[in-house]
Amino acid sequence: MRRRMKDRLRSIAIAGTLALTAAVSGCQSACTSATLAPTHSDAEIARAPIPYAVVVDAGRFPPVYGDHLADALRQSGVFARVDRAGAGRSDAPLVATVTIPSEGAAVIPILTALTLGLFPTWADETWGLGFELTAPGSPAPPVAIDYRWRGATVLGWASALLNLAPGRSGASPIEGDRYARHVAATIAPHAAEIESLAASARP
Image (cartoon, rainbow, N blue to C red):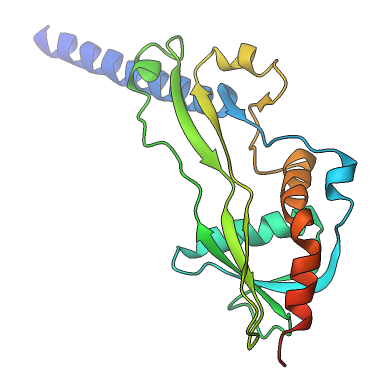
């Protein structure tokens, strides 16, 4: 009798753990609300594209940051070609090096998990990256560009309502047309300076 009771309690505990895990997993994928990149007009990106190739280097940061920058520059369509450092020889006259990483919030959504998403977790996060463009062998100074933005990320069922507001989404904020236009609009004001830098590169 006592053994049956123990087995039953153990089964209930396992079922409860699985249910909690499934609920939290579902909430993480379907109940997230992030702040999207700022919007920009066509006039703000009118000076792009830039007719030069660029090779991306993560610099002193982990390689994933270089991957993110390369993806961002490709999505923006600003440069004629985007290569990745270490992926073969590149004849690009420009080098884009990550200088400022994104900043995720180190928050564990304990209450959100315990309440199965009813109690939301809020955290400020910084999306995007800062980088600088240089030309190998050129005495010209680097061109610094920062396309980061900051906003609250929310985890919990309240996200479904928050995502109805403009500027918020449950999808990744570093993908899509809005993100690509933001990156392009941030680079566009520096177009003349970047073209001058690329022209000064020494083969």
